[in-house]
Length: 89
Image (cartoon, rainbow, N blue to C red; front, side):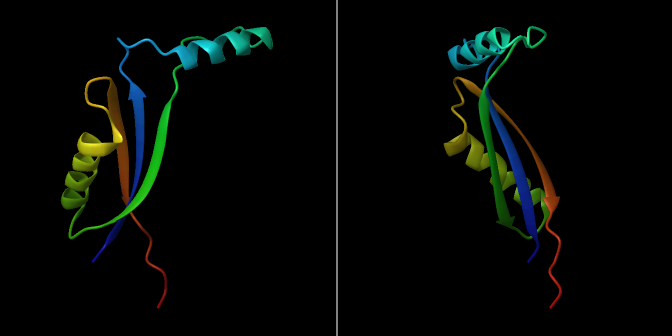
């Protein structure tokens, strides 16, 4: 059965205030990185999924995000999925 690598990014929705991102932006400005703006903080999650097809793997990622990895009220998620390279036997 193929294995797929999922890379998931979970971020606060744009309508939700991000105090951690604001604090980081202020710190960057104090360090003279004044061109850095609109800083947002999120989560980066990687996982391997053993699935019969890419479609099945996508379904698993969506379900995992909706049920556990992302708070559907406050967060959005995006992901990419690639088939893992097979190791030589």
